[in-house]
Length: 83
Image (cartoon, rainbow, N blue to C red; front, side, top):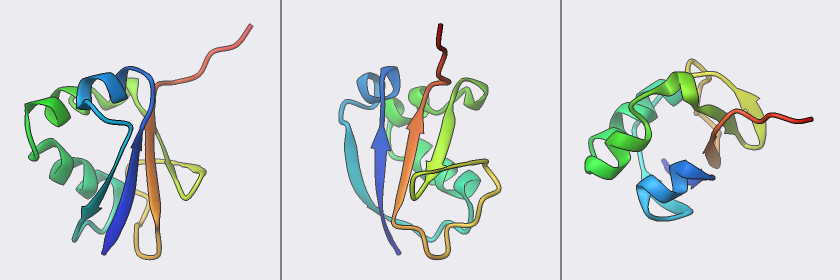
């Protein structure tokens, strides 16, 4: 399946691009992260500490065990704070 993967804030800076289209066999977000980290050192560095990363699948806040069966987009971003 093909997915659009979006990166925001410091994740975008580490990966070096705001988005990419990937061909994946990942069943879950966790599987996708494993595939993305294997692309290169930049992806590995960006996704190495998942405690500092949030994820949305098709614009819905999700977790690492979320299935990707019908997904079109996965976004990675740092936790938001407000004040």
